[in-house]
Length: 185
Image (cartoon, rainbow, N blue to C red; front, side, top):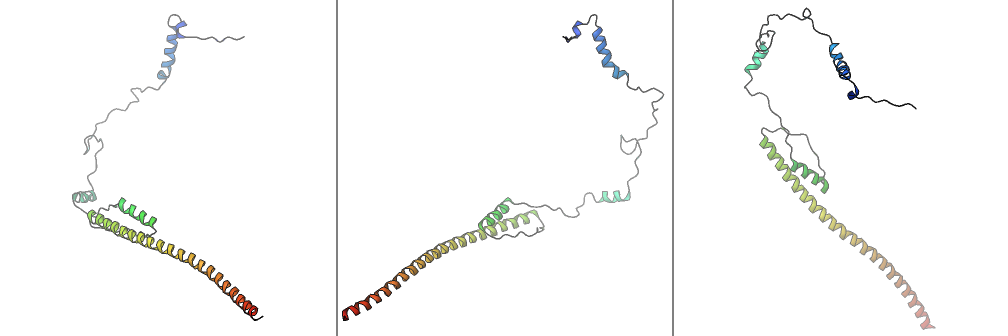
């Protein structure tokens, strides 16, 4: 039967194990390439450019750069912000749930943020007014639908009763005819 042997650093005498471990650790460091003095580049005289720590001299600024530099503090063009309104989004979804057909057109540009927000507030008011009208119209429709369904039930009952009454009249006419012939006989 084979026995496994276990070694530890404490079993080594006179630091042989420590020396062995140290040599294994230092071997990769010693095998790395070293820079010799003859391979190293000699420093050249550095010319500082326009920037303090930039070693190569920078070219003078171009005409385009100088023209742009003159425009640095001026206002050109426009800033476009997309205004979002959670109230308008909620009103639109509420309108869709109420049964209103909603169409969203493309955005409109305003001169100021306040004008855009005021327009959104007007749209929210308009949508809520339409929702109220739709809810009222829906309620009126449902009431009229209930009345119509009640009318249909009443009409069906009338037709049924009328058919029974006509059958009664026919039976009564036959009875009267039979009774009249009985009276004569």
